[in-house]
Image 1 (cartoon, one colour):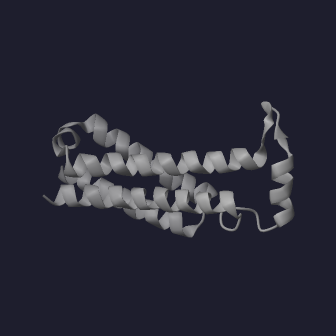
Image 2 (cartoon, rainbow, N blue to C red):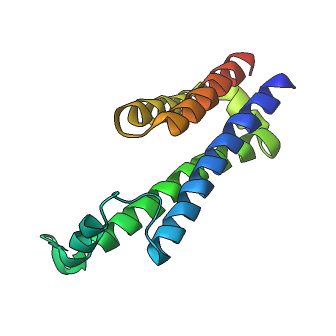
Length: 139
């Protein structure tokens, strides 16, 4: 069924985005080069600046943690879409609430990518949203 293929493709995009973001974050935790400020002095300043909420957590550790949790969330969303397509297609087909919730999350990812990220995550999120819209209408 075409809706299953479209849903799986959308899910795969989100799994890829979340996995790539997690990989970049893991690389940065070891040697900051990708998702970090261009100025190395700012990275050092982040390492030395505790958060007001707790004195033992600095901005660098929080930055790495926020990036890891963001990547997990995106990959989990993609995994849910993939599982819906490949393992449990009937709930997605029969539930407008599930389809609507997935569409709302996908729209929010596009809005957030447009507001805060750069062109590649925006393009990938937009393609995934289009696939999800098509899968929802064909379900």
